[in-house]
Amino acid sequence: MSLELRALAIFAVTYVLISGRRFPWLPLNRPAGALLGALLMVLARVMTPEEAYRAVNFDTIVLLLGTMILSEYLKESGFYGMVVGRLRSARLGARAMLVALVLVSGLLSAFLVNDTVCLMLTPLVVRLVAEAGFAPVPFLMALATSSNIGSALTLTGNPQNMIVGNLSQMPYVRFLAVSVLPVAASLAANGALLCAFYRDDLTAAPHATPAVEAPAVDRSLLWKSVLCLFLAVGAFAAAPWTGLGLAWSALAAAVLLLVIARRDPYRVFAGVDWTLLLFFAGLFVVVGGLERSGCLREVETRAALPLLRSQGGTGEMLHLTWLTVLGSQLFSNVPFVLAAGHWIPDLQSPDLGWVVLAYASTVAGNLTILGSVANIIVLEQSRDAARIGFFEYFKFGALTTLASLALGIGLLALEHHLGWI
Image (cartoon, rainbow, N blue to C red):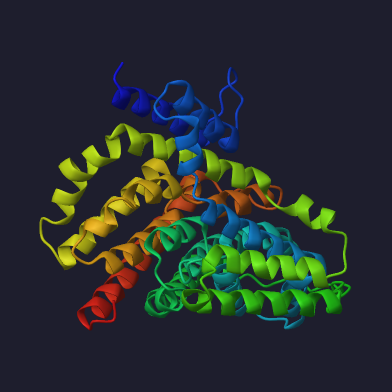
């Protein structure tokens, strides 16, 4: 079997394993499936062990680790409970509460990674709507979809954006500046669509809200955690001058917090999602094997670049958008971004290509339940409070995804026309 066929076969096996399908004869989850694919790339001699090590993008791994540590300390301080507690104490109506949740989840996801925000907020939101007597489905949909949209704002909002940041070396502030309008417009549209789509659920009269204890907050740890988060964001902005990059800026802020928190770090380290880091490491090797075999170059030269360049300018951007949406659904957004990252430097407008790739792969996660890990987290953690099936999710997911793409890509095209990108 040729090198290319071996690489493609291993990638196909890996994709099946990481797509969420479970087989009784091979009970592996996503991280284990990615590690199996990485091992097979070496055993099949698609790449050497040394090449496999070099294929891992440690900047992305370190960036994820740093943001996870920061978020875990915020959890320990009671930050997430405090945010939801403030929403509870405001005693808002159903529509106002829904809009507030859209804004809160979107903003937090921009700086704390959408998957982590959904993991922390879902049980709190379930409790919040139960106490208020609101129907849970609109609020769970708001949390999942808004977290995905909001995470598109920064290079640290989600894993695929982190990969784009490390591959493109685009400055953090510049990416944020060109993403503000598309993300703000999409969040506003998502809130309006949620209120319209679930209007019958939101008009039901709530039950009387029972008196509940205020969430426990460790104010000393909270202020230290928030300070280090702001320092991390400041370091991201200053990365072009400090030379640390996004990864080591995040790690520096995390280690500073480990030092000044005066807490046993073992509890924080236990909360870090190490399986996600293993998943990314394995995935980097699998995609590196595809690159090593020449498969990615063949796809790039024979299909991707001729298609993207067929109309140039706006046409190039539109083709990249639909390719990204399709690829993110077929292969999941992170593997697709890893592969598509090889095409972007050869486009007519590489900076625009990077922003479109990040934005489209992120909001495409709202299309289906399986489009984003954040969606799965929300629905799995809330399964006892509400059952949201595939097609029930899809009816709203398709609506908000189309609206986000139309608004966001349209505004990015306008920014490109004005010379901002």
